[in-house]
Length: 148
Image 1 (cartoon, rainbow, N blue to C red):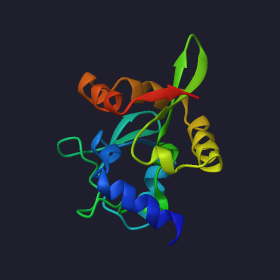
Image 2 (tube, rainbow, N blue to C red):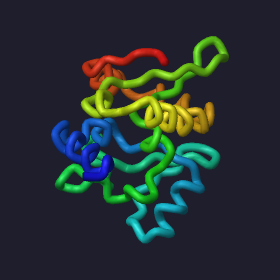
Image 3 (cartoon, rainbow, N blue to C red):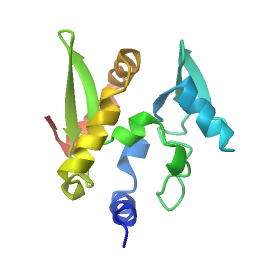
C-alpha cells in the first residue's frame, strides 16, 4: 500500500484533527491554483496577498465526509507543512512539530520535507497563524509539541 494511503488511514482515525483548527491561511497564488483546479471559492481576503478559508464551526470546507482532503493535489503550503508549524521569537524563526497521530509515521525525510514547506511560509502568514483564538491553541496543545 502506498504511504499516502497509510497516512490517509491515520488521518481518518483522528477524524482529520488538523482540518478542524479552522481553515488554512494561504497566498493569492495558492488560492488561484485551487480555483483554477475547479474547486469552490471559500476564500476571505485578510491582507495584501493573504486569504483565509471560510469555515463552518472551524472545519475546513474542503474536508470530505470520509475525512480526506478534497483539494489534496493542490493543498496550500500550510497544509503541506503539517505537522510542522513555524513561529518567530525575538526576530528569529523556529519550528515546532505537533505530535498529531501522524507524527509517529513520519520518517526524517518526510519531516525535512514538511519543514522545508514551513520555511517557505511568510512572516505575515506566520503572524496570522499565531493570532488564532485561544480555544484553537488549546486544541493543538492537547497533542503536545516540540521545537525542532
